[in-house]
Length: 169
Image (tube, rainbow, N blue to C red; front, side, top):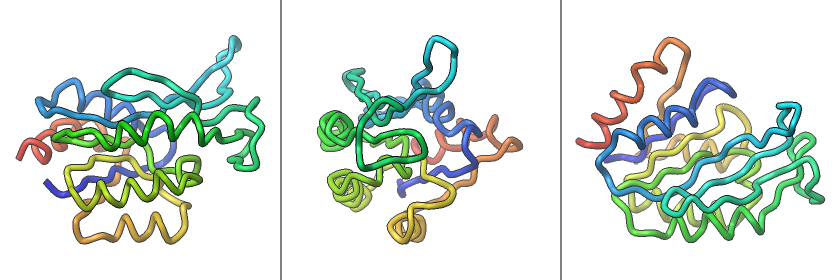
């Protein structure tokens, strides 16, 4: 399998797609996904990262995190992020899931280095920012061993089965 990168506008359903795919695949997988943290008023206050093999959680970014690395109102917590995702990305698996390759994650040099190693091995399915991320993101999207898929409202309900075919082939 080539590496598959799913892109699309924010809130189009990339993480939901990954979660549905994982429910249906028979492949042994490792990796992580990101999820919104909401406060008691149901307003987004940050993002957490969840390891797929252990369900270990950590903070990726939060409004209360003091950090020089910021995306909007969120301070990025690289220590928490890296302590969970780097071991997860190094695990032996048939499929490596990375949700996502985005602005917050790209503050981490360790993440970028490990991502490149994983892409060399193949069998990566990841979500990636539609815009932004600079040359690093553009270079990943343009790799010979990458298939870039645009998730849209029109195709998102069909995409789980399409991706399953590609992964299981």
